Image 1 (cartoon, rainbow, N blue to C red):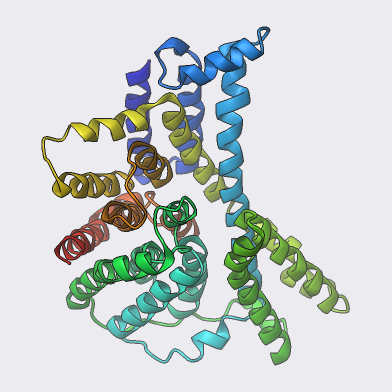
Image 2 (image 1 turned 45 degrees about the horizontal axis):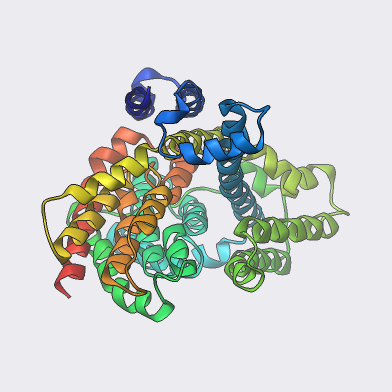
Length: 443
């Protein structure tokens, strides 16, 4: 059953990749994959599991319980709590961004972007994303930038190409900042890296991992982008300039406040984003209380929540639940330990392990992979292995669109096809990833 779970996981990923030829929404496959893997996990003999000692301890303390009781009480509930944090954060961030967009707030930025040529606009968007991702996180940054792209680019194929570069830029920008990516946050909180060292050690390869795809794409893209027309329903709503600016700065302010909230309170980020959403919700209700029913229906948070793409959130849920099953059962730990058998000695061995873990993070969640590495190795703070892991795990997820939180968010918002991304963006992301690895190992 242990290896059957791996086969089912691979089959599920193939079905997700073939979403368009099969004409079945990827969220359905993701949910079925997650449920199936946990069902198979429940049928395994607990004595064969790497984590059986935890189960045995629970059963001794609760003699009336069973292995399934331990499974539900310990592994499943724990992972669902972690997954819920991501989903609530995603829901809150998407709602804030959509609220700002509905009020025309992003017009403050788009009106100042004069570039219509594809190449200059691509560089501008990518650099902004790279910098923003270091201050915010790659998930929030990608959501904000896709909202901006919808105001700047009308053609779907052009917007998909820009969306692919936003994923690469967001993941590259998050890798060198201690608060830019979940894996760097893990390493930073665990005392594996310090702030100044992670910035100075990883910023150059991260920048290279973005510049290389940009240079390649600059020779491939030609022409100009066409700006989209205004939506019909927006023409009926007259907003004052101060109202638009007020909601914009409040929304962006709350997004920027989340890392500060986490640092000061040590509470999870989703509480900060939900707190910001609640204040915005109350503010807009008061601000528009004297408007007509039609205008309130367009501008209220209640209306925006109805427009949130629920299928994307369910897809995220299914993928994370499936990976959590492999993590709990021990397949990911087995994978991490098998890398120890690489017949190379010295620093080169651990560099290769970091490169492989980064590549694997495009297939499975980088969190359990990095957590497994942290449990296996006892290198001191700011060791080159920890810095290299921060880079590879952060940028490796760009090679597949479902390999990072930023990619899944962009995929859901823009309905980007898995196969399209594999053909158009994956080679660019791979070239940047390899170039960044080479730069880090050289310096």
